[in-house]
Each structure stands twice: as structure tokens, then as C-alpha cells.
Image (cartoon, rainbow, N blue to C red):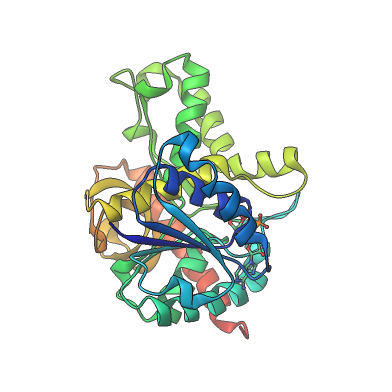
Length: 311
Ligand code: APR
């Protein structure tokens, strides 16, 4: 059995902890936040649900990194969420300071951990965590693709009337304006999506997927999404702890795949005990490939901006 830490006991962090504890994957899940009492209170509440839900994993709420020591996987959710009208990129500077501080402490306490970053702007915070931790790039990855894919899957199921469990979809690229939904890799009850919906209908779903997070932010008015995001992050943690090498879209460090190098970007990857164990090269259309390369260039440009910040 193993140890998981989730940094940030807000909406995203606490729902991730609850999903991971309920899955009985680890001996303990440590939840750490800067707000005193918050992780402790949530942990007490969650632990009291164990006998009802029938699982053993214990949740430890803390404000001290000593309690996170020796974690196998660490999920970093600390940071501000968007407000209505904001783009994820508007959070760059404020969240960079938080992610830098948190990563330094985590890297010291758990030098062998796999890091899963979810704080936005996602591709850039993943880059920053890799740089600050000094960990091998394969051990640092970001969660975006499982979430964007889940949103795309939901929209396809709603539009086609298909059973949600019979829809397969895929999104790659950045977790933002240059998200790249991949219609050529989408299936509805075994049929290619491109044979089920026309190009105009697919484009509408692609656009709604790209704006999937903003749509929820504007409805909630305060805070951003966390149910689907925490499900997506928990899936990555499970793959690491079970060493499943399951393939999923992950914000991973590229090394020439799809003609893209040296940038963190959403690509299909196998996830196991070492983090990203391989990046898979799917047969994308020329347009999809072009969009993916454009996404890489857009992330790279913002990474330069990140490097120019005084964080
Ligand atoms: N160390 C630890 N925790 C911190 C720190 C820090 N330095 N700074 C902030 N936090 C905590 C806050 O105290 C809060 O409990 O991070 C938590 C953030 O929780 P929410 O405001 O509820 O935000 P949430 O919806 O969880 O989103 C967190 O994930 O999806 C992204 O865009 C989202 O960047 C945001 C992140």
C-alpha cells in the first residue's frame, strides 16, 4: 500500500482526496493547505464516512509538509481558480508563486514522488513544477486531457443520444485556447464520429469542449469545476499506483513525438509507476497534427513569459 498527498484542500483538492480515499488505493491520503483547520476539518469529516462507504484509507489533514514525507504520488491543486470572464492564463503570475513554493516543499519531503499538477494555467504550472522540483520529466505530468476528453465525450453522447459508456473521444494540445479535440479518434458505439455527425455539428461540440471550463465558471459565478476534474486526476493517480500503463491523454514532456520537442503538452501517453512511461504516436489527420504543433508553439511562447516573471 502507498501514500498519496494532495496539496490544496479547496474544491478540486478535497474532491480528489475523497475519490482517492474511497477507492481504497493507499494506506493514507494526506491533504495539506495553508489555511489552518481546513484540511483537518475536512479529513475528520471524510474519515467519519469510512464505515458507511466501507473503505479503510485514512485521510490526514495538515498544514505541515513533514506529514507529507515519503509520498508516492503528489497531486498539486493549490492556487486560485478563475472568476467569470477570466482565462486560465490570467492566473499565470499568482499561481506561479504558489506552485513554486509548494513544489519546493514537496520535492524536499518526497524526492521520489510522481507529481500530478492540476493548477491552472495547466501546461505552464506543469512546466514550472518540473523545473522547480528538478525531478526527471517523466515523473512530472499535468492533468488536462482526461478532463477535456471527458467533457467532449459527454457532449458527443448528449448530441448523438448514445450511451455515454459507448462513446470514445480524445482531446490533446493545451488546456486552454489551443486545446485540440481529435475527431478522427472518436467513436460512437463503434462507428467513427465523422460518420455519425456532420462537420458543422462536430465543430460545435469541439468549440463547446474548448470552452467547457468557462461555461461552468460562468454558471457557478464563484469557483471553477471540480467533479469531473477530480475524477480525471484520480484516474492518473490510480494508473501510477497500480502501475497499469494505461493510455490516456496527459500533459507530458515531449521528445520529438508528432514533431514536437521540449515542451509540456497534452499527448496520448502511458501512465505507470514511473509517471509517463511512453508517449503514443496516433495516426492523426494533417489538420489535427497542424493544430497540435500550433498548440505546442503557443505553450512555448507563454513559457517564455513565465520565465520572465519574478516568481
Ligand atoms: N499552499 C497550500 N495551499 C494553498 C496555497 C499554498 N501556498 N495557496 C492556496 N492554497 C489553497 C487555498 O487555501 C485553497 O484551499 O488552494 C486551495 C484552492 O482551492 P479553491 O479556491 O477551491 O480552488 P479549486 O477549485 O480547488 O482550484 C484549484 O485547480 O482547476 C484548477 O483553476 C483551478 O488553479 C485552480 C486550482
